[in-house]
Image 1 (tube, one colour):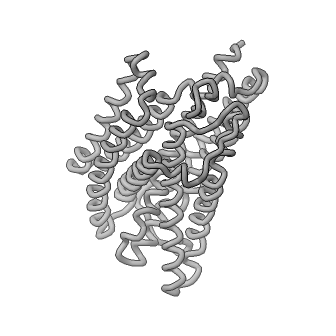
Image 2 (image 1 turned 180 degrees about the vertical axis):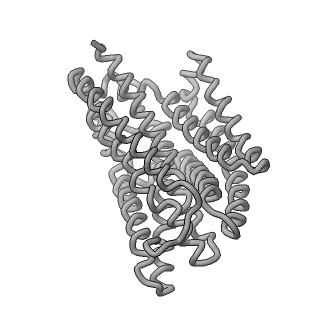
Image 3 (image 1 turned 120 degrees about the vertical axis):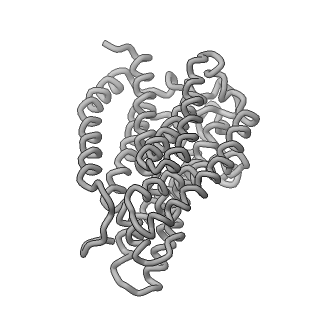
Length: 342
């Protein structure tokens, strides 16, 4: 039988897997939405929407599963995070719902104004969701102002300090690049030629923001490197991250977009891992003092709860993975416009 500490560590790792799964899969969905206004024609905009049409709702299952797992495995962390980011989470929920509504309503009529409004909604909701994910991550890295009662007392404007804003911009640029590479795989002809130019522009914007965010993190969050100093083997991940970033332009130059997409997925996975390594063993660091940090060990559920959840996860996770693989296999290949397309 696994002891309580081991179960808590396993669930911390599983939450990381769910977070990586969501950011990799829904990341290109959000990226496509961010790039949507760049399309030249209505046909191109429809092709972009239909490239993610069969996939986006399944991708968001990973986010729902992540939230449910966090609530059940680490309820104190769940409650504290929501107390601090309640307004931000309501905005995020609005963005995710409005993006779905925009996809479904956009082609209900051919009127230009109607489609233009929903196009803007699709773009705005995708941009807002990506940005909010980054801002939330940046605030967690900095630490939240919580004390003994584990309640975060911080205004929305206070959460928009320079560092979280930079991390928000990093997330937007990363998802835009990720979405552009996905679009290149799914399109052809004139649209694909346009997407290729977008990839290069998004890549250089990402590089600029990535370097800035890295320097900002080292200056603003010195404790982010503590685990790396204590466990030097972790430095392999930043090295692999840099190599994955460098392989994106190399793969595109050699006309190997599949390798570029794998590299983009690897970059997202590496950044999510670096985030987890930077805060571990904390789940919610406190900016008022380390004694108020919510850690993997202080925020966990009971041993019986974690054991039962692990059994459920061993049954449920293969189902989610199987569904994901099947849906991507069924809708592989280039996107086409049909009678029932968006």
